[in-house]
Length: 334
Ligand SMILES: [Zn+2]
View: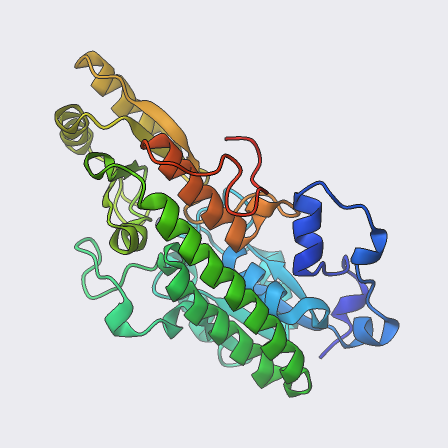
């Protein structure tokens, strides 16, 4: 452990994040200020995606200072480590990445880093029989496991165990925080199941910019079509767009979705194509696929991200969901 905790901003607990997100923060006392002893001891944890950083933050609380390398809107398939990222990781007590070829451009780097640092690919905690494969990815798995809250729980447990391994003195705290967070994720899974079940059968088609939602589709019974493949690296062909336009018209799909971490160019081409064929398709909303919302907001947490997606998809495709989601914390519709 180093002295990293003294430099950065103090970590906010889950309740504090919720309170901030709800704009209902009345009591400064809710923001626990770390005691000097805690600040000195804070573990330096670096995570690649916002989702993994959120899991580490929820589980570690004030015991760790967690840094996410990829902020809102950043595409993990294309991201490469910067010089300052490398310095951070070399200085960290624990480095968490997703694996399953999500950080495709950084994979070799992480395998090298394993020689000197504690590096854990937490996405790979999901067992092989629970992973989805994909035609685009010969011999590999679809990495987007966070789209199923029950699978994400496995990842949270892996984050907890990685923290315990590098900081055994914090075991009790990590277990207790993880249990609370897992409860919240279980509630989220129930909420998503309930609202998405209200979408009429003929509207259960999710058309997005890239194939991030296969786990979502498998969990909630939606047909999922991405214009690009599972990675954002491939160019979508004109033929693929024409195919999808035909499908939108045939099936009278009402809405398609943009993603915060992928260009909306192809989605707009679909809408124009459908319009030319006399069928109106709207943008059903902006979904969080591979990155979360801004830090310090509810959508900037894993639970908020999935709550947002489930709520927006349900509403856009003719189902019934509370306007501001599971906990009444979502921003006005995006
Ligand atoms: Zn993706």
